[in-house]
Amino acid sequence: MPRKTVDVETAGRLNMTLPKDLDERLNHYVLEVAKKQGKIPYGIRTEIVRRALTEWLQNHENDLDAIE
Image (cartoon, rainbow, N blue to C red; front, side):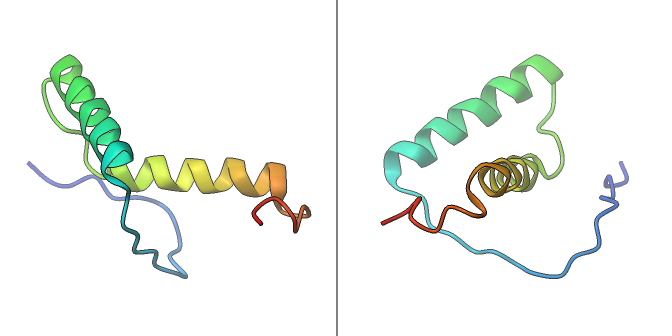
């Protein structure tokens, strides 16, 4: 089965380590999605991070004290 391509011009790469509890929650979510769809959607973790970063920047891009 061919991989789904993403129409996004890539300009940067992010590598992160999650705390154990957050990793477990993310894994649980991905497994539940896979059960519902019958497969693990290609790039689901990447899409979740992109959406989270987009939302964060929409809400806090100009709030330089959001993380202290």
